[in-house]
Image (cartoon, rainbow, N blue to C red; front, side, top):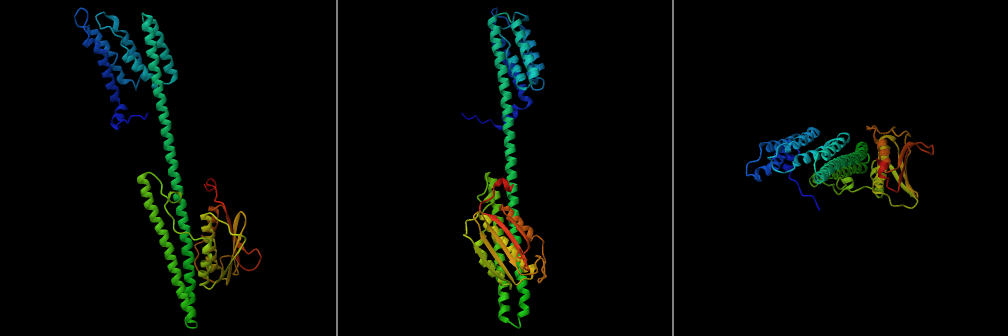
Length: 413
């Protein structure tokens, strides 16, 4: 059966000192009720002493949270003074004592509450005249003590659950922040690849155009057309990335509104259309417009790859060719794909200077290209290296190996 909802105002009142004051007043009224409404056999009013004891055994409850043991002792001692006179209503003043015992059992540590409880039981057995009254008193004491301990257990369990919920919320926020950082890093890498590749090709083509403008107008026109095409392609890709960013922001607002995550990977909205290995021929044709001869060869049987690995393969080849155009001063580059049973090996070789940063083109370098290659490969569980060609011929070579299986989540963290 579900628990009844408690209004916040009542919950705040229950935790305030005024709730104990109200409890003391209600207990005083309850213990004074027989004196107010029951008539004595003689018809005369009850002795004033009964009212004093009934109220005196109740008022200490207003301090039961601050001093539970003194309040219990005060209620017990004052209640024991009720029968000092005969002209009082016949009743046991147990309400204040039981409530104080419940409070002491719920908040006091075991080295305090257990001796106090045992002393109370012993004193009660020694001072009560009849066995029947003593038995009822012990049962009531045990019940009040058990309820107090149960209340303490409920509070402790609620505190553990609250701490666990807070810890889970912190973990969820950290996961979202890590996912957002990964997404921002991915977008930053994509933007670097798009801008570096496209601007490098545009600069090379713009430099070549005026050189052949008078001698070969057709080639100059083709160079200027390639500049326009490369620029349009770069703008299209940038628009797609910015659209993803806007979608991510809208999804984040919607997630915060509804308390969930978006539908994209890692909860960060849909992504732009991916460029994959199948787009490498188009990339080769685009780079060829800058005057670099590019060939693509593949060995082995193509196998399905994870989406991130497929995109990483394209970006690695793109960055390697961009470096060739910017730094190598090469005339020819070759992209070699070797499909194996457990992964894809990528090699991009050129016939340029051979150090990967060399001659031919006086283009600026941000210094992040090769680092980005390694980061992309590592994000997919693979590896990437760059250096002189293995066949010792002039030129530079980029080597990467990407697995066919997606990396484990724990390995990426």
